[in-house]
Image (cartoon, rainbow, N blue to C red; front, side):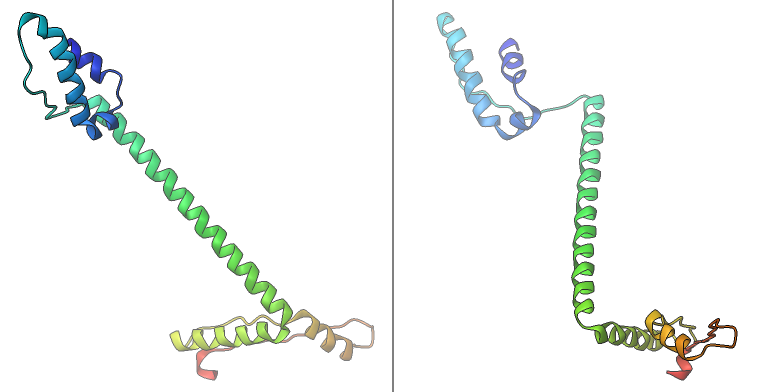
Length: 157
């Protein structure tokens, strides 16, 4: 028992579970050396079962759960990073081609109208285009007022 305690006491649980054969061989050698003087030879030493106290099992389960949660957060953060990189690349592409943004709007409208026929869609209207209209439609006091209601439903697409 002392040899068993001394041998297993310096190993981690993972080392015990992974290296049963090596530990058995080490214990057999140690027992042979100690019992050889008495004329006793140890024929075989095997570690067949390792049982853990309930408290240690709960502690290990809590550690494993914390590690899984940490790994899940890392995976989610990587996903967010990849998504933000993809959005940045898309923004740079659209900035190089002004018509690309307008085409993307139209593509979005087409997909929305295919999904729902009676949905109200708020369509973004370029500010610079509004300024063009405002400069051409001034009233007598110099103020510019524009009311451009834009309601598009699936029935009109």
